[in-house]
Image (cartoon, rainbow, N blue to C red; front, side, top):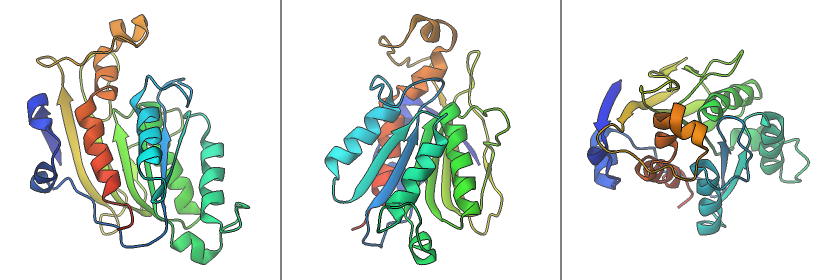
Amino acid sequence: MNRTFALPVLLISAALLAGTGLHAQPATARGPLIVIGFMGGNVRAENLIHREAQLARELQKTYPEKLRAEVFANRDWQKALRTVLQLLDAKGEGHPSATEKSAARIVIYGHSWGASETVTLARRLDELRIPVLLTIQVDSVAKSNEDDRIIPPNVRQAVNFYQTEGLLHGRRLIAAMDPEQTTILGNYELNYRAHPIACADYPWFARTFMKPHIEIENDPTVWGRIETLIRTQMPE
């Protein structure tokens, strides 16, 4: 399912999410939600110029009792996996029981290479029989030896935001390995020709050669939609 939205149409609201089918099922479990974010390119996790890092910080600050949000450089997947396992284990030792695994409530998101790592982490969790509530890809660019297109069956819902301009652009289509297990909420195309996004804090090279790729990363409307999707997964 491909859907193209001009920027004015991307106004974030509950009505819009419901009207387009872009919504996640509300959470019912009582434990905190685990939210894992991945940065794009070679960006460090603590670089707060980038929306990926800003989102994790804002979520943790706003909902300290309802979730645990962590963000990682996309090369630090092992650290991200260890963090998930430690958070699932009541003892904090990184060895969750089968019951703790089955009760996992996890959201993973990322931009560019970080979006590729989002799918790869979900696949690693599938190998460990750990479910994932939602994966979110923003202008996903596949890393070497990774498949960012096929969503593994442990993922309940997945969504993909992308743009097609410039030298670097995201994957147009993601699909479920098992459509009976995974719902693809949508593949949503963004275009910034008529409504550019300010990226003044980004390096000149990025602004010159991959501007649309960082415009979608810096688009507050896209990240507002992402935050809304994550909030629907938090315990009531």
